Image (cartoon, rainbow, N blue to C red; front, side):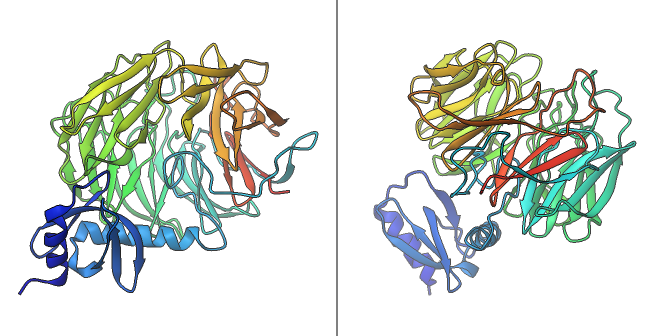
Length: 481
């Protein structure tokens, strides 16, 4: 006798043509269907198909990977609908660098928003923030130890700090300063980190104890770039996804509980790992991991690590910003005079360029997509607004405090951090013109930062607070008012 879910999937599959969605698999029969997850209720996943019909499917009837994915989504839904929002990874839960906050200050007073606290022991490095359940996770080098740190996000008081590896600074600091670059990732009461020389660590989020470790170089033949490993780990369902680079396996999936290897993308041999973080996407019904390397942008299948598609890129020196995916289109940008492009993946998983130009030459401060426009710093142009559809520049602002840096979006405003002097500018999201609504300078700033180093940690706004970092100093401001 067929199970209820099998009958449902079989009947629906007869007349539904799937659109952009996740592929779901029945555990017993292996039958698949493509649908969006609408809600989780009474032990069932409510799946919406292309024709709008909702199919309530018992969760135990789905594959283990589907069940792990649902568990992650269920926890995310529960936390984001509670009294506090969460920011579990670099660029946030949707990898779009857009805060869920609302009701923030629309204009800042003279001198900027109120400073709430300063934490002074973050160590050297450029790691950003993950914030979950009122705890802020980051990492830095204290002395010669790469240290993962947990502090109270409301008070700045340290809860725990764990040494995970040694940092001699050799082979990667290149005069810009040592210390970790990647941001910790939180998932199911564990924290996942990557140090500059390839040490992957899984820690208990409650007490900081190390659960397991791997090394991207010694375990997978990885090849770091000249500034070390800088990506932030991606956790997707039951797996941790990382890019060792090298000539053995450009990307790997690890079991997030044990650290065991799930698969290695052996047909992907990019050489240097480069610095862009991996993000997850669903394109043409295939769940995949999108990663920018120096000479190619790739989509790697989530189930087995095969390369689904690849698009050439003429990067040089370093490619850093995380790609942006919308539907079956992917946007990338690089510094060093390279520029940006938008590609489209057709129904046969063949990529083609929609446009390519040098409007956005984004070094490493990131780009944010809001509706049909992109916002970020472009070398030699300052802060710019770029049209997604044709790549043309709408406006730019190249002032003393809007030359180059990192951006973040919260409640209809752009938080633009100038890397040279730490000035933060509040800019209204407006695709027609530049509108400035406030400005202040980050204080204190590190006297220990290497002279060539800048203020490169990306800002984050969460639960009414703005978090900034310059090396050992993490500073929290009240932007709720």
